[in-house]
Structures are given as structure tokens and as C-alpha cells.
Length: 178
Image 1 (cartoon, one colour):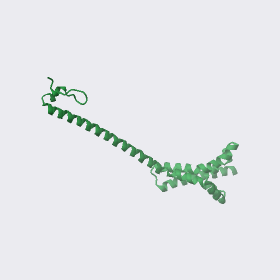
Image 2: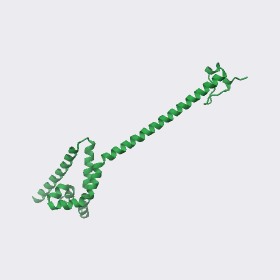
Image 3: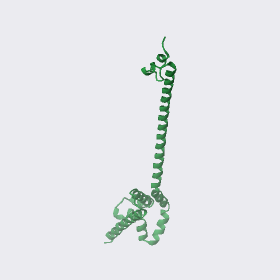
Image 4: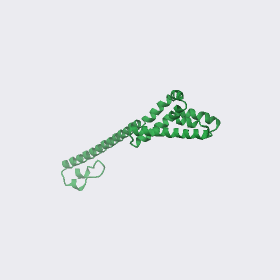
């Protein structure tokens, strides 16, 4: 007659090892059940750990998305200012010619004859630059903020940008006059 220890398979299909053959049948069943319980518990712990890892990855993605939104505020501010650009242009034209040259240097540069643009492009580029200038400055500010610059440092970079464009316009005007 075959003993219970020899005929009882493990959960995974293998027969009992030599360590269980010398034990009474009741003890062998308990050992098999304990091993099965351990295997089930290990599988449960693995699945819980995988769920924790998925949760941590989701939290990291959400944190990265929130950081991206926070870092994009200069671009959003530039888009809002672009909506008000025609009104600001009307206000800047009251201080002709330096109002436009200081507030909208890219618009003034795009409209200069010295650039030698074709007919239609020469008419549409200044209008397009009116709406594009502030979002471009937002990109410049975002780039400056990634370098861990302070708000005053970002403002200084934007001031230098406007100053250099105004100097470029001044040089173009002097060249046209001289």
C-alpha cells in the first residue's frame, strides 16, 4: 500500500521531497498546507508590492505634471498679455516713436524696410509679431526660471532683451538717416 506521504502532491505538481517521507501522514499534510500558504502569501506580497510601485509611479507622474504646470506660468502670462497687445499698442503709439520701440521692439524690427521682406510678408509679419512677442518673452522667462534665477533676474533678462532690440532699432534708424 502506498503511504499518504508518497501519494500527496505539492500544489505545484511535484511530489513530496525526502524530508516529508519519514513524517506521519498528518504532519505531512500540515507541511504541505503550510508550504501552500507560504506560496500564497508570497504571491500576495508580490502583487501588493507591484500595486505600491504602480501607485508610486502614478504619484511621480502627477507630481511631474504639476511641476510642469507651475513652470509654465510665464508662457500663460505671455498668452494673456498677447490678448491685450492691440490695446497696449494703441497706448504705446501715444508716445511715438519710443513707446512702440521700447514696448514692442520685435514688431518694430519686423516692420523695418531694411530687412527687405517680400510685399505680403512685410505687411503681415509686424501684425503677427504683435501677438507672438509676449508668448516668446514667456518662453524666455520660463527658460530663465529653469536656471533657478530669481524673479528680479528674470525681469533683468527681459529688460536686456528689450534694451538690445531698442538698440538694434536705434542703429537701424541711424543707418537709414546717415
